[in-house]
Length: 382
Image (cartoon, rainbow, N blue to C red; front, side):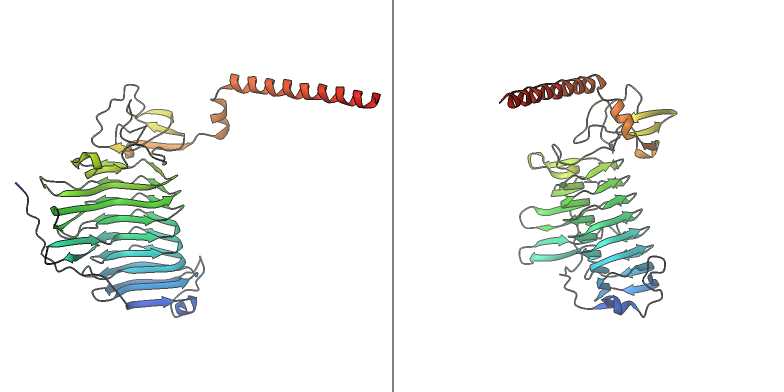
């Protein structure tokens, strides 16, 4: 029996043109406490901001150091909480952003840190055709476009209610050299009316689009429960479209539910599911599992992986999806001691092959020297 999803909200397009607090250029920051240096940043703190009809905070075209701390922003899913555009050196710490279209929207910026913050129910929806009952939903908690050096660390992404969740936890488009570490993502999904399917669900805890060189480490992701819904869906723990991204020591919980298995629509841990230009394991490390120290690579924990660990190193004996080194237990059970040293890695490679190559090189150089001496001798005779 098809489960009825209640759509009890009016749907809006967030076209904000004003802000409660707006700062354009470094000059505009001088009214704030601080001097704009890394040791003494300009400070915005201890504020409660209503973002129902306006952007909460807008910062644009700045390079001075800014700290936003202990700020709460609450909206009605119409306007962004914070917009950072063409800025650098901003730290956002201990903020709560609830029911905004985007909690934090970052455009053409770098050196942005978001830490120890809570995001609840951030998204916006609109009617594509109200007459046909056809809607769509976008937005999310943290969205970044064409940016680099972002540090998203130890945050919590949770629903506000059944109707309001973060449709995307972290959504990066053309973002480079950034870190997503130690975050907790719960139920990143939104279901809405669809003329074609009756209803449609989409969302992702972490969504990378044309992004490269990023590290995604030690995050906990709870895949939303389908609970018998027959709607089509594109819901992922992680959607990774990019290259040279490193994904390891993450925990994926919940159950995958395919809708159209051939097109990978449904509720899935990861997409793409096979083949990737990214790395789903750590560098070679020394780690402790149980009471034993090991050396090797660590992947991710997948709740549905039922593989065995016959040698007791904490890694299941076979691969799982894109992961060649899936963990037998959640990542908290692995103590990282350090990276394997470069010279150790070289020493454990094939020394015989290396020695043989050196001998071949020496013989080749000796041959060239002999040929050179012969040519010189012939030239002198002329």
